[in-house]
Image 1: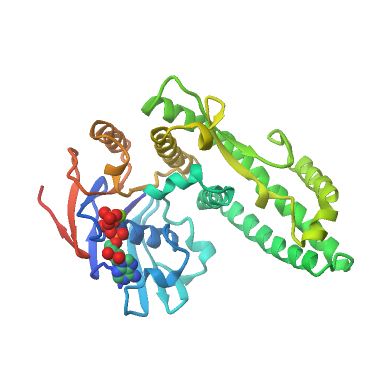
Image 2: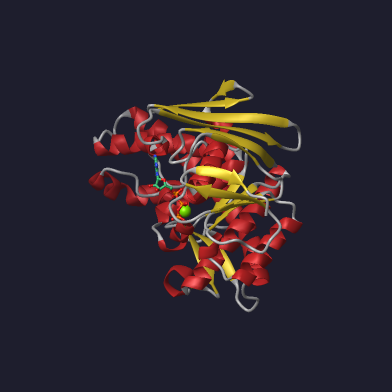
Length: 363
Ligand SMILES: Nc1ncnc2c1ncn2[C@@H]1O[C@H](COP(=O)(O)OP(=O)(O)OP(=O)(O)O)[C@@H](O)[C@H]1O
Ligand SMILES: [Mg+2]
């Protein structure tokens, strides 16, 4: 999959323009504070309808304006298409080939994998950071997961409201609870499958690029114990059983204490949790390996490479490693969009970013 061009209007500090991308490596050079991350963010916004920096729509709109939008031409295995997202005040609008579509259909049309300095939070941050990340990763290539998760989130809210108001004797409560268990089990089942598959690739990537002597794994961690071999049916039963066990506590605190909203994803390096034991450098390498593995997962599910976005590449790796990594991406014919403060010794289409303006460079 390749993005052919982007048009953005009133996006962050960027001056409106159209950028045509190379199908290979695109490098955006610029000093601090010029708008490099904003470029990557605009592409990510166009592709996913979201930002990786903020959940507030208004942050994306240029100061002093009331709307913003990104329009992208892209090609996938089948044909060329265009996709666009607009924010007007707080309303969002999504289009595919100029026709309005709901967000459910928009998400996952253009697949991107992003690597930004803040991604280190995936290791050091709270479980909710990891849940949010893996949920959107799985959803980007599985519409079924997207729908199951959406349904589960809705049911969780309803169930919590009943618990908070102590309305558990209402006949509707048990009907909702059956649904809650059904969708909860589906969400967990898919997460377990994803973790199993990506963990193998993750270890291979880590050993190949960073440290052949260590073993990296990703494990799914749940209050429900060792559930990795459970069938869907068994997961439903286990969920029910645990809800029964915790029910008096749930009533006391007024919210659901069992289910996928409580689970976590742990990175283990040589069997020890990376969060507590790995060095800064190892953490960066783990995250980078994770992002490469995501590329493989998208390729597996969608039979197409996603677009790889790397923000501030110089802050991660020394120059030799940086070039190795980029050459590796080049060989795999993955479209890459990178920002950097310094020129890199690679073959790329280069742009200069200065005070929100983007200029094409010859060298
Ligand atoms: N909504 C907005 N409207 C106008 N300007 C904004 C908006 N949001 C952020 N900015 C400004 O845009 C500028 C560029 O930010 P950006 O993060 O893209 O820079 P950068 O080139 O990535 O810098 P660095 O190298 O330090 O990461 C900053 O000065 C920031 O304050
Ligand atoms: Mg930046």
